Length: 373
Image (cartoon, rainbow, N blue to C red):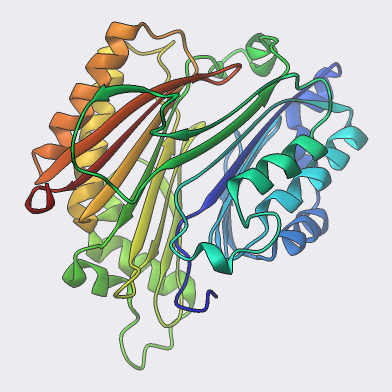
């Protein structure tokens, strides 16, 4: 807990692996026992509160955000004053024991609301980069760090308005295309062309935010409270096909993971006045299996639903695409996202674009209410 309030902005870490043994690749990190997961999360300073899985991956709701465990991929995001990057050497150690080699690392986060409350190695982006550089192996030789928007990022739209949101990105890759090694079963969908959407929202509508507080005297368990919040807020309607694992905290706050085949979505809410925050993330929209116009439509429709649930005053959207999308397609994506969000009363203040070796391209946009334009 931060001195002034709870830090909602998450730190997100993605680690990708490969190996030579087909049997290891089939299950990989999903064979990691619960005790080992707990030891890793203890170093991060969070715990598992709920879990669900399917034949593709395991999904864990944490006391501070989420963990997704695929056979050859780990995605973990944590909020508050957690020390997320301390999980890196532990995951790498377990990977070595299983005969897996790390092929890529991607770390992202927004601007902290309470940066002075963060603990090592998260007291600054520079310190986070140094920690990762010192703990990642030499085979990840293609490395890049960027803060978006920045002078190094390509500005797509100029605006005199500014936003408190920015996007910190660090990637490290071995530069080798491992996608063909990721499809273990014939009916599995290849990892190529994955689109990841990460949304950060602040200054939530106060009436809507109250739905993420427990009712006075409510003694139900977190799973029951979380399910009620999922229904009354409209979160269930964002992706009706997904299986949702949700949790409502005491006295307020909410987390959920949704699983839909090999794809996931996740939402985390800190609803307190003065530092209200909500995040939404989804992964899966595969450009290799869908027309890119369909992907844009999916993103736009999903973003509209998310905005209607929270009605934020300030919002940022980061979209990472691992496929070789053309510049013209990226520009269409920027415009489509802007049109989708602006139709609900938000104005696009900045748009920027950057490329990261081994992880494709990132489009980052910020929005504020039109009254603040």
